Picture 1 (cartoon, rainbow, N blue to C red):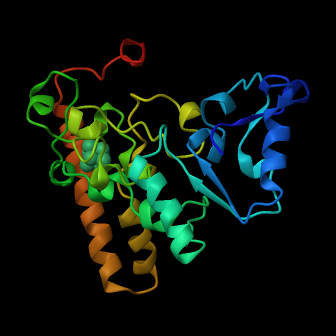
Picture 2 (cartoon, rainbow, N blue to C red):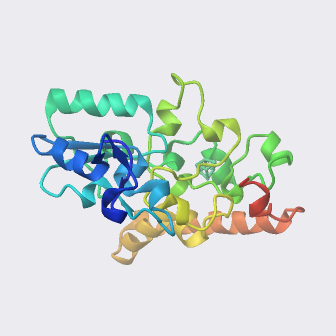
Length: 249
Ligand code: SF4
């Protein structure tokens, strides 16, 4: 199934040959062993689901509740991921899913986990505008709003167009398009708050440290040092952060 399902006005916002999309979906799912929701709209509602959601759009999982659902999110999803999920299902059955219903094989790591710019992040080297020294040198795009640290997908490894490139390699931060509600999360060019974006691993391991795990202590210390590096970098930046409305149009 591709696309969100408009439920408003009795499903009248999407009708083909007198049949609404919601009725088509229910009909198709009747004999299905499983339903693959392809794309962020089908998986999580996507752009139609964004506020104010005038058509009452919902994800497939809110319509079909008696069949296994595999979410293949992304706006659009990666072709190899779509193909891979179908082949996997036909060969081995249901894949192991994450808490968002996505196959762990393709959604088990964040973009940030596998990003080739990660060494710059770890060193506190950031681009602050799209044409500054950091941007020209290929430094981390975190301060330009990259959502890679909180976005699970395979873009950084499979890439696009037969492995040619992906948004970060083209100089633009990740929009987080494979995550729920990515359109309503406060702006593509607004940096993630440090609490959720800079040190997720450190926080997790920091919790282990409370229980006495030595590795947690080390990770928390590393996280603090990274936080200091980012704060220092931001302070030294000569240019103010780009206006959000100067990039989104
Ligand atoms: S913040 Fe974005 S650009 Fe920077 S390392 Fe993470 S994923 Fe890559």
